Each structure stands twice: as structure tokens, then as C-alpha cells.
Amino acid sequence: MSKFREDPEENLFAAAARDEVFKTSPLSVRMRPRNFEEYIGQEHMLGPDKLLTRAIQADRLTSLILYGPPGTGKTTLAHCISQKTKAFFEQINAVSSSVDDMRKCIAAARERRVSSSKRTILFIDEIHRFNKAQQDVLMPDVESGNIILIGATTMNPFFSLVSPLLSRSLVFELQSLTKTQVVALLKRALADKERGLGGINATVDEKALEFLAEQCDGDARRALNALEIGVLTSQKADGSANFTLTAAEESIQKKQVVYDRDGDGHYDTISAFIKSMRGSDPDATLYWLAKMIYAGEDVRFIARRICICAAEDVGLADSQALVVANAALHVSEFIGLPEARIPLAQAAVYVACAPKSNSIIKGIDQALEDVKTKKVQFVPKHLKDAHYSGAEKLGHGQGYKYSHDFEGHFVKQDYMQEQVKYYEPTDQGKEKEIGEQIKKRNSG
Image (tube, rainbow, N blue to C red; front, top):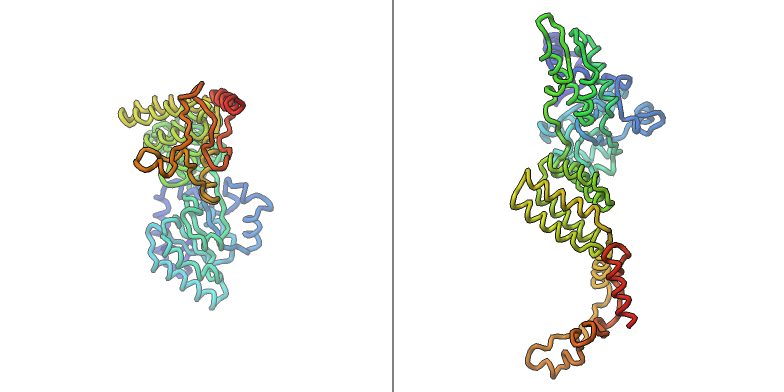
């Protein structure tokens, strides 16, 4: 548990120690914006006349949930809010703090509100790490206004936080920083002599900064820390440094893909993959497939989604799509990565390029709905099983017409008590021929 604002009774030795810790902290910590004037990004929620801006300026803040990818400024935003508001600021981290820590903060907030009418902002970083019972501890004091909760999370709060907490909070989604914004942050760090790298006589290749901004995927923390290690390890004996594109490539190492296996990165990427196949875009299909493979997604999961898309979105417009997808499922399991990327890509592109029809899923879903909600139809007697002794006495099977005994291997007869249309062939691909065959049989 830590306080953001200084304790007025803090002794000089403690202050000196704190300053020394700050000096040795990573560049991303030292360069954290101290106020809104230094804050970069999130104009969609912090621009003029935006709801959050108005609430901060009026000092009428309610509980907030700040949600977004790493390095987008969630913690920084909470600190900036604390500087703008008149409320007392407490900070804990859900990873390292217990319920007891939280209760102490809440008890102090109650006492503070009674003794001085001063409100308390309780900032909880990684709030999704708290389980349901821990989150419930916050509820009475959030509802009564004893604390103004600001929770920060990289997980979708609608999946990771309890509904009562969400209903009493404003949820703001922070977006990844743009390449231009990250470059601006890097240049600020290079120029800042007090907190940044301005004390180093560094020659910096503009392409190196652009590379870091490109590779960090909008994560300012990762870009700043890569810049620091790149500049410091490029220093010469005279203290100067030459930060080149090569040094930038080495300092950031392998590009990290934001792909949390049980969170938004996972679900959003597979959603984009499926929608790209459905939308007949083979290039986008290959990109999202590559992202999943690169991030270490289970090849069986990918192959299953291709199979589902082949049945749901292609169907009988090209029945070969499901055959190819099924083959990719078995082959990829057999050979494993990295070779499995090839049959997976082949199947995904085949599905993407195939003619599309959703008539199968529409038909089966409507039939299931009828079975679920309407009176269930009885099996007509002529269709009932007649392969056992005594069936004839019950009239089972009597009057059934064996299709192969008739011309064209087709004969008209009732297969349901009440005729209902479920399968509506489209005019796409092979299904157009199927539709014409159905019409021809029905008109005969």
C-alpha cells in the first residue's frame, strides 16, 4: 500500500531515500506525466467537453474503471486526476495487496470524511486480480461515497468485474497510443535533463525512434524502457551515445503481440479471423492467422474455428470447404508447428475465397427453435420403424414409398405432419444447383 501524496511529517532521510529510488527507477516511471498538460493521448475521453474532462474540472468525480492495453496511461491518468482533484489519494495494487490493506484504506477514508469532509480516491491497479468476494468488500463504501474508486485493468471489465461494481462506475476504455504519440514521448524523454536522458549527449537516428514506436504496439512503457537501455548501452567512453536503428532493434528484441489467452486479445483476434473468412478477405484472414500462430495459440483451436466457419458461412455453396478444413484439423495435429501453419493457411484461404451461404445454420437453428417452443410433431406412421415383429399390426411403415423404386430416385410423399420450410438454398456456388434441383422435384 502506498500514498501518492507526500506525508507532511515525512522526515528528510525518508525523502532522500525516496528520491534516490526515483532516480534509479526505469525511464518509463521517471517520465510519467505529472499533470494533464504533460499527458499524451486518449483525446476521445479527455478532449474538450468530454464527460471525464468535465467531471475532473468540476471536481465531481464518481468511481471509474480505466480499461485498456498495457502502457496506455491508466496509472498515469489516475495520478493526474489526483493532482487535479481536492480528494486524498490512496493507491494499492491488487497483485500484492490483501483485503486487510483495502479495509485499512477504507476505514481511514471514513474517518477522513467525518473529521474533515475530505473525500478519498482509492486507486486499485490490476483490479481484475481481486476475486468476487474481494470486489464485494468495496461495494458499501463505493455506494455510500466514502471512497471514489478508480480501478485500472487490462482485462475487459465486463468479464472480470462484478456487475454491482460496474453499475456504480463509469467505464472508460483507453486506446493504444499512435506511432506519432509514442515518438513524441520518446523525444520528450531524450530532451528532459531532470528526469530523462537529456544529460546524455546522444545522437539519435529518427528511424530508430520510429522503429521503437512501431514495434511497441502503442505501449509507451515498453518504448521508453527500450529507448533507455538502447541509449545507455550505446554510450562511448566520453559519455556520448549514438542510438542507431540497429541499436533500437536490439533493445526492443522480439516484438510482443498483445494476446492474453483468456482475455480480449484472444477473443478479439479470433473474432477478426472468423469475420475476415466470412467476409471473403484472404489477406486479412492470413494476417489474423499469423498473429494467432505467432502468439502461440493452440493449432487445434484455430483449426476448429476454420471448420465451424466452413460449415456455418460456406455450407453447401461449396461443401468441399468443410472437407479441406477437416483435413487441416487432422494434418495440423499430426505434424505440429511450424509446418502446421501451411495446411491451416490453405484451409483458411480456401474458406475465405469460397462462395458463401448461411442457409444451413439458419435452417437448423429455426428447426431447433420450433422443437423448443412449438408442439412437437409426431412421426407419421408410414415413416416409423417397421423392422421388428408386430410392427405391421401397428400399421408402422405401411404406405412408405422407397425412393429408389421410382424414376430419378425420387417420389413425393409427406415426411412431416405439418410441412415447414427450413432450408432455403441461396444462389451462391454449388447451392444454386441444389436449389434448382429442389424446385424441379417440387414442380414435378
